Amino acid sequence: MLNALTIDLEDYWDVYSRDWLGIEIEPTEAVLQNTQWYLETLKRFDVKATFFVLGGVAKVFPNLIKQIAEDGHEIASHGMGHTQIFKVDKEEFRRDIVESKKLLEDLVSCPVTGYRAPTFSIMPETKWALEVLAEVGFEYDSSVFPISGKRYGWPGFHKGICKVELTSERNIIEVPMSTISVVGRSVPVGGGGYVRIFPYWFTRWALRCIERQRPGIVYLHPYEIDARSKRIDIKHLSLEDQRKAMRHHKMQLRNRKTMREKIIKLLSEFEFAPIRQVIARCGNMGSWAIKGAG
Ligand SMILES: [Zn+2]
Image 1: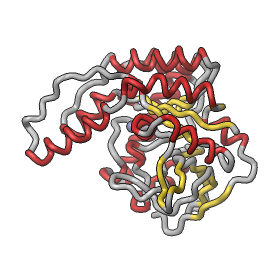
Image 2 (image 1 turned 45 degrees about the horizontal axis):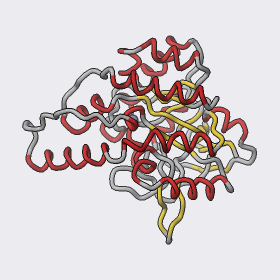
Image 3 (image 1 turned 120 degrees about the horizontal axis):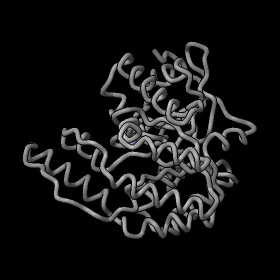
């Protein structure tokens, strides 16, 4: 089975500062160094992946995006500034994805047809975003997490790659994140944080179960291999927000030291390709109709 390997290309300090500290900083050099490790490792295993590139990173490090494309990987969009969709309206969302699509297409001179939302924020309440994506020319989206989560999730959504029939009668292909049912609960599998936190044997067992039925979707971030930390100033936050920000930061740093080894095991034990190629191989795709997407 050909599984999809995806990398959400963003800088940890940039995204963490925006999401948790309410401060805007530029992507740091760390994203360059960490992405180089991924590029070298993927070359070693002769694997191509899909990179969902954040517009903010592409603006600061355009040559990195060109290098990724020259290495034969698929370039897709992760929006401009990592703002979750439930924080914007339709017009702001449209501007964000149009800008990021154009920025990336100008850099790599080839059509950008895939999108992944910041923190999987396509959920029942933001399903209108799929309509906007189809309108501006995206062919597939890979943002739905078919779980009932605290921060994201679309419980009950189709588990495999499917054609979403929109109210406008347009279609978009959805490539949902992989989950497995464990004692009646949908457990996420193959995502960066989950790969870091679960022992490797669990990820391997779960991905083997998934690939018996459908392609597995693995997503990783450059920073997940980076165990370096730095002092964070959180004094401007309320006490409750300080606690939340620190809890999230602690969770994000967990098991980063063993992540390279886990990624190397995944690459040597499973077959991976970019999403575009995995979709092309999908014969009998399920469909999912959206009613009242406006
Ligand atoms: Zn992201």
